[in-house]
Length: 465
Image (cartoon, rainbow, N blue to C red; front, side, top):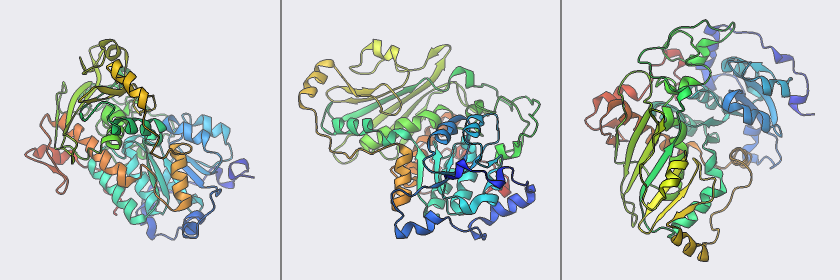
């Protein structure tokens, strides 16, 4: 009988004090908590059928789907600050222990956990992920890895130190459609690529806030662990303007549509073209400063030439101007009717034409314009030379855990990707061109950037590598 089909005495764990929770959090891997069985057995080669002992931090919202669909593994614990949001998983698996505080979860059941799926708001990725890896747990963290570059680098450094298996939730990285797109572009479907256009309808107007101060206080629901939700961010009153879904509009908690969707789309660009880091990022957003993200943005990332491949200019558009979706007025070779119709597009402009997918993860069959070029290309489609993955993005991570290998979007790949994407937020917030020095983690002649690279975390929530 699997773990989540039998009663467990720890369904209602005894509370621990804040002081004790933070003490244990700080102890990390130096504590007496043992590594779980699958970690200890990894070098000996656990069988492909090994059931992984999973914990979930974030069970409502984005965490709902994995919590409901990965029960071929053993469920050790659920953790969500809001049991009402997590109710579907809690009802389907009533015997899985439930927690509101991930620190209490690790304290009570840390010995039993192999791996953790973290689907919290972006600002909570850092502390939850750092503690999990410090304890030797494999981690899957939803995109973006974090909303700031410092947190992203810290998570990457901890992953290297702990040598656990990591994966960032850019699901399209495992899709067959991405491989088809790369094969077609590599085969010269539209010639050499020099421009890329990306646009999305996020953030939708219902979740965007233009407030230039903290949101007004509201009564907090009984028992809501506000300190845990803040995860070390500056104290402020509870409000539904942050919780449960509008937090992405606030720089302290998210990074707007760039962190939400551009990281998906730029994963496609990086996988297909290998553009690396941009040499310059500029932005023409409608407002600067303040605690909230712009309602819309037009951001340009400029990438250098790579060998025989030309330099690439990437155009990012998102949000709304008034009630009208902000998108390019024209894309070479693409019919105006298609531009007007589609809300999420990745378009590669080459010397012969344009190839695009009308979604944010390259899950659709590529379309080529002009149509005469597509018709010609269809007469000699390239063979499928890039291996396809079996199963989902989670399955890729599970295989790496069982086999001792690397997942496709591990932090060696996804941390630099996230950092490159987040350069757009620096351009948005300062209004200045960002010429990035990776070694010094600084922007040339834009000292205002320094204060935006790292959140002002309470000391007890900072986890040393």
